[in-house]
Each structure stands twice: as C-alpha cells, then as structure tokens.
Image (cartoon, rainbow, N blue to C red; front, side, top):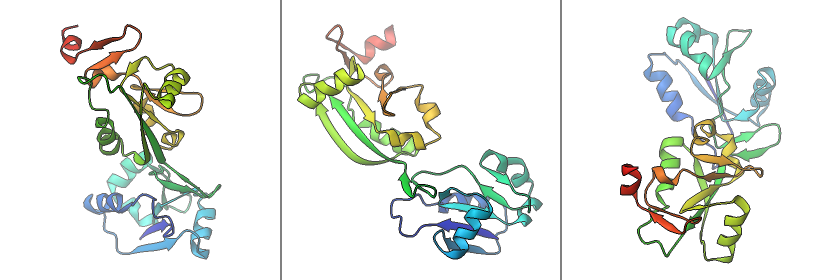
Amino acid sequence: TLYNLNDSACGKCSDLSPLISQIRAAGIMVSEEKVIEIKSKEGKELAKKYSIDFAPSIILSKDAAAYDIIQQAWAQIGTKEGDGSYVLRAANPPFINLTTGRLRGIVNIIYLTDKSCTQCYNVNEHKNVLAQSFGVKLDKEETFDITDAKGKELLAEYNITKVPTVILSDEVNAYPATQVLKQFYSAEKDGSYVFRTVSVVGTYRDLTSNKVVEAQQQSQE
C-alpha cells in the first residue's frame, strides 16, 4: 500500500506522481494507493507517528520489503521505520514545512544584464537550466541592467564583477541541488545565490577590466 500525503490547498507544491510512477515502473506492485490530506485527522496522525515534517510525502507499507530494489535503494531517499514501513525523507520542493506551515522552494530570480554588450550570452538561458537540470521552481522574475539604479546597487551589494549573471533568492536552499549549484554560484550571507562562473556559459563582460571576453577566447585559453 502506498500512502500519498499531500495538501490539496497547496497549488504550487510539487507533484509526486513521477516518483510514484518510478516506483511502479521498478516492478513494485502497488495494490492500493491512498491519497491522504495532510491536514486531515489521518494525515496528522501519520505525520506525528513517523515524524514527517513536510508534504507532499509518501509512505510504503512493510510489504515493500519483499522487493530488492527497495531494500537496496530506499536508504538514499528515506528511512525504514520500526514497524517496517518505508517513509520518504527527501523533500521534493516546493513543499509545505509542516512545522512552520511555510511553503518552501519557490525561488525568485533576478537577471542582471549589460545592454551595451550585444555579444554577451543570453542571460535567460539560466531559466531552462535551473528548471530542467536542477528542478528549481521559479516564481518572480525581474531584470535589471547594470546601468539601472537597482542594477548598480546589486553589483555593489554582491561584489559582482562579471555580467550578465543571475541572483537566486534564499528559497533555493530548500533544494538538495544546492550542493551542486555551489560549484557555479556563491552562497551569500543573506541566503541568496549569485552565479559566478559566467565563463562556462558564453561571452561576458569583465567589469574590472571593462573588457568583453568572448567564448572563443575562453576556449583558446
């Protein structure tokens, strides 16, 4: 039996259907799928029993132990409880933090451009990469040029020396992918993430030398 704990009032929460489909595709016979409102009496009881602090989440009954793949792989995303049940522990943003009632994982993004640099890469490329490769759910999007008052403020605040670039709000910290993002972004004191490795994307302007660095030059170097 698969218990699907969710909050139907959360229109922006992630859908665990792909994960459930993967479980079925792995050859696990789900005889019954129970969709349970996390705010219902049963939902609250299950959350308390298994110390579940986010929704959506899923629980598999102890019968899942009959499958080798569960015994081998479940530890990567969840725990096996004392009663034999398997509980998902890896939150899939966006989700509701059941302790605070707060929606986590809705990320705002700021695109910082240099309109004078016609050769510079299209900063909007970040949107697809973040969504498709890292599963980041973007909400509010704003664009500022480095000649704008806000653009100048951002340059100074985050000591940005290469543009174009993007700044992600602190909600990106809700994603497990932040460990990978840190290879390309700097984690700031306010929780924001600033993209720093612009050279891996394309042509950019180095504000320190005020020179445009072309992609071809990068590959030669």
